[in-house]
Length: 404
Image 1: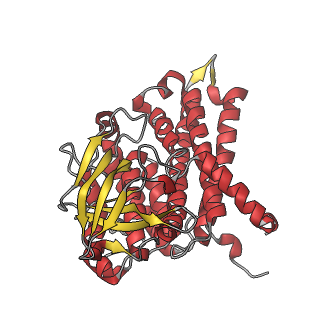
Image 2: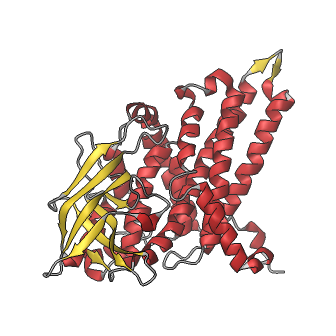
């Protein structure tokens, strides 16, 4: 057997990955952590800090270098999501919506002209991007969406509809909409009676495009903005249609795998922070003349959390190693890793609150915020129930995957 294989660090497989982690960890400690409590409490997106991610080259992680991106891989995305979420999952969600839902989509599915014109602006942070898919009555049921686009004789399209629950849909307290939206809209019906979806790049300033209501009083992820997007006879030029009419499912399914891995990576950051907090507290707090870590009930909380954290970390980074950002085909594990990691992260956060008692229940000690933020990860990017359905379906088609 060859030498050296046992030295591989799956979470930092190359020197470049390790350097990226150190850079992001330093930035999070110095810039992100000090503002987290305030922005969560005020339900306010830190736009100025977000633009600093562009200065660090993090807003286009998987975009080609020729357009201002970093040209990196899925493991790099996981590293950044984990490190930011260790401190501020809400801020990380805004990053994910921009970098993974908009930039990665454009980098892999846009035309050369679209990439040359838009990617440098979103990679630098000059423009903030988002994805418009979910609607008030249609989330997991993507093909049921009602936002529609009708072609005009000059090749342009007229879009009408509303999108809901859009992270980065508005970027400030004045209701300024995202600079650019990766928008899915119905443009027809196929021969089986199913909706055909087409992708459009809608830019701020196009008549009929605006941000609607901002969603307040969210349980968690309060440091990111969530809002409605409105399209009222919005005219989109022909050059802003992505690919051919009806091709959106190709873009959508490929990028959903990327998104689900990113959300699972956020879970790793949340779990690590909560595990560190409960472990430290178990040594600091005494009861009945002993450190509480000496009690079996506390040992169970810490021991199970350690095992689940290590398991999710291994699964997330192994999935990242295998995921090819340019093509679909990894649904079994992108669904599996999100199903496991998001549930485990919320459970570890819950145990941390239990170990820390009253201190765990208040905002100053972080873990209650982590628990609130973790809940969204079981819903956004695909519900737990959708993952269970997909995994069961995929294993019926490919039972051999179990033996691989």
